[in-house]
Length: 224
Image (cartoon, rainbow, N blue to C red; front, side):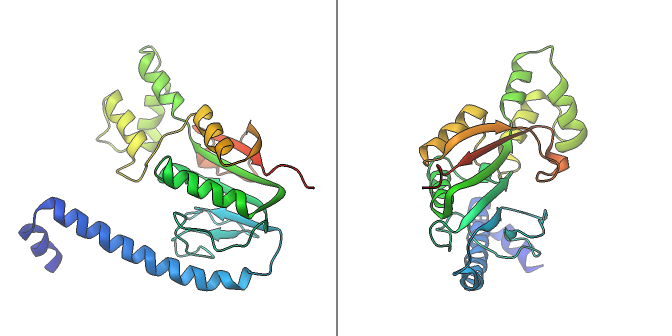
């Protein structure tokens, strides 16, 4: 009730800013809690991290996100609380697009590179933006828009441009869109090598993201 009264009394822009500030304070306290829990991992080697796990928890991995079932709650816009070269594998699926590009993305990828051991693998999946843009330009192609309407997008998306906008923004949750070239460039800038697109792996990736995702593996050089 009080929330509705406040919302009616102040301009919508200020209300949205206050909501964003409230959200950031919540993230701050969750992050502090995660930092405390991460201290127990300080002496461990060959960690397997699942960054931005959401509800898709991987047994045997350290699952990191703000969802209730994650092992650690960390703000991945901040430095990761792990020592250099302590991870054998880092996995991230449909998370990178939630970071601002290039600043937050570069910071995140640099941290992933730092904590990987030599020869370690960073495996990442992002929504494929080449597909919807190609479909928009090729007026005879309806595959993306038909699938998006049936599976992914809300009912208010009716025109192709509405679908394109939703793909890019996801109600404000998405900050950047990727194609293979851009993802490869971002990984290379962070120092990663052997950057190669890979096929969907049913033992690693989420079945509901099989369609419309670019998956790439990259490594931190080779062991000395």
